[in-house]
Image 1 (cartoon, rainbow, N blue to C red):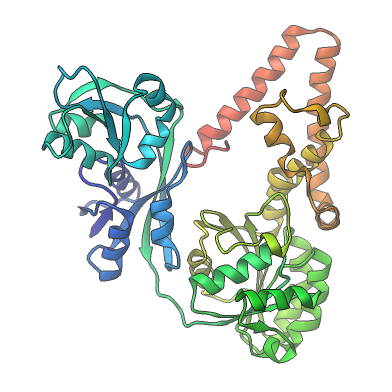
Image 2: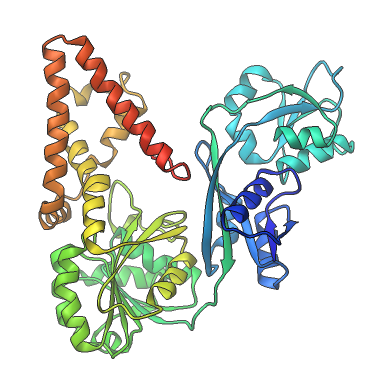
Length: 475
């Protein structure tokens, strides 16, 4: 078995590849250094390696664009995810060097140490290398000038005989990077897909399908002028009508919840037997209860879906083919989901940029979304109503922006989402009110001991959550 990885020996990718292979119980493994993400993808396509490991996201510097670009349009399956702490050391070739005129490393490493480098080495220019360990090797071999420092793992610098100047230069002590272990999957035959509802999500889905797959994409929108605009822009190949609904292989409705139910009641009976439907509505139980019996009766395969992506403001004019890059897709199988459907859908959604697919039942989806999404929108929408908010300029940092970003919701769609999921949402609202009242009572009573205890409990809850999910911290 061969695993190709981004970087060379001594890189973080190599360490992650070995960690994930051990976790999967793989023992007879040859690790192949392939320097960059495109090299990993090329080796996978050529059959030179069986699996690939690449960095996908750093919690400070963000998405690894090199990997995002390499994976675009690729049909693959993620087998393991690894999140490792990243600590950057600064090495020089000669300890007698008095002034460092340049710092060389991978661009992600440089970004993760931006503030420390600006403070400690303000005159040093950045030199971008393909990998942190390659930077160390180039310095050791004389490819880089002797007055250059390199950022890399400690063991990489030491293995090339360099002199350690500083360690832990990362700006954030919690600095960590996610790595994925993937294999390529068979790309199925190109399909005729209809995206119904061309707002932000639907328009972005149509554009992504057009750009990153070979599928034929038709669009439908209640306001026809929007579909015409999408056609004129090249986001769709045509505007769907009853004849197209009857021919399509996959129908993706992206409408308001109640409108989706009405739309599918009208159009599933038109579809050919064996066709698929994946709705992208933010509640699942009600949809599944309403649509599954109809899908079974008509011989149509139906799976619930929910893309965890979006922007603060909606509308087709804001849609983009890259909206789903690095995002998660939730799939909720139903009685009308056929064997193999989840794998096929996972492959399709990977092609348009989704990094992982979470499979769960509709009830679990609604319970979790009530907490992770709907409650957050309620808090943001309530918080921003303070009469103090308009005067925030000069008084606000990241916390205010984080709290208010999603307050500009679409009240018509969120009204439906809240009401359709009220059984899961109301207990979350009640619990939040209880916790806030506890804090209020402690503040009103000037009970410092109780207040400190409540704040400690919140901090410990957050730390416990992150400890349970080391690969996906909630920040």
